[in-house]
Image (cartoon, rainbow, N blue to C red; front, side, top):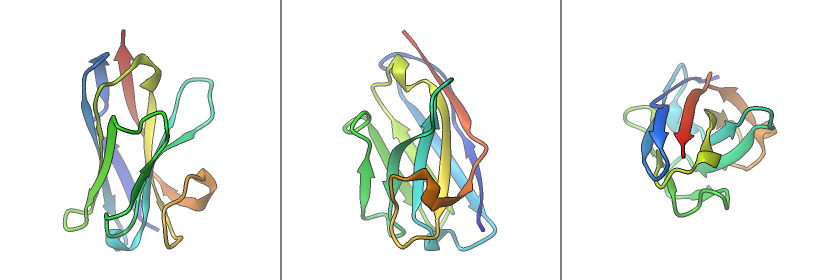
Length: 124
């Protein structure tokens, strides 16, 4: 399995931006479709965005579409989540994850490798 470490979280005002990074090691990063998920306090972990191995296919949860952008740099073994126009409801721990399936999915059960998460807090 691939090991994942997130970074880039923090405290930001509503309307601000953050860029999360997910550094991978252990296996060939380019062989894994990737996803970002988030978990707010007291809530279930939910899908945010997914990206195919090549980076050409991406899709998003409706709640972040048009504000967040997922990308990857296979040469750097890193995935990213650019978050713009942040809202207080985006406050959560954000996790990146890798799946052994051929394409990324919205289901957290399909992902077998997870990072420890990075906290994002958006103040109003």
